[in-house]
Amino acid sequence: GGGSTLAEGIAVKYPGELGKWAVENFVDDVRIVNEAVIESAIALLLDAEKTVVEGAGASGLATVLPAAFGGKPRAEFAGKKVGIILTGGNIDPRLLANVILGNLARTGKLGRIAIRITDEVGQLGKIIDIFTECRANIIEIAHQRIFGGALAKDLATEIEYEVRDASGGELLVERLLDAGYSFDRVLVSGERR
Image (cartoon, rainbow, N blue to C red):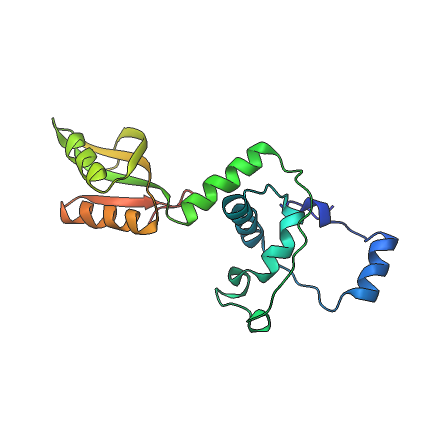
């Protein structure tokens, strides 16, 4: 196999004889795409086409997505009809769930934010009101005491939420800033910014 990849079905050390013959005789170009673009292709097929395709089967679509080329559409495909063969739905359900959640986070429809508030009556209610105003559905809330020099009454409140699109998340951030809150946005990888 080719190590850890979403495209396990095509991650082989050596091609089969028939496959090698077909590529040598009928393929003009071979492209390599990274895991994130394959993941985006799986999510796009599920979202737009309601089609479950494994990583290897989504690799053809991944090669033509603008994300594979720095976000720019490929000029060679402009104005042309392109046919892409989709093969195989053999994807682990947990992996598929992770692909879906990761895509929601990357597209800004799912987010996690760590807000610093004081441990006083009504503080959480004020924050929830802002989320409601921005039509952000709260999925999970976790309070944690802040250590390392902060005041004893300070809390880190992590809130996981979902919004209709990325602009909803940006509106939420804007409203929290306007209200004077300090926070970190928790990225898909667990990093904060």
